Length: 82
Image (tube, rainbow, N blue to C red; front, side):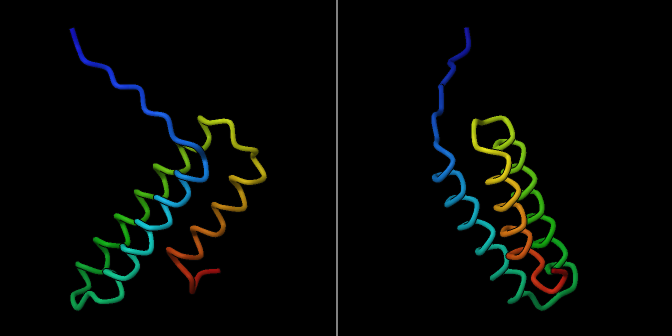
């Protein structure tokens, strides 16, 4: 028998956690000296963003809010592309 833990998190908490992790990855990316490290931290930030998006879509948040936050997070991850 497996132990199952139900996790409950609201959308605002999820957004705050995601923002914190993306800003951390951005800081590490900016401080990286090697191209490999830069790419690694960018990929980690992208993975965090993808995970947030999947969780947000599975929840009950309005699609307009998810879309607005996705643009906001992409601006954090890749400010020069927007």
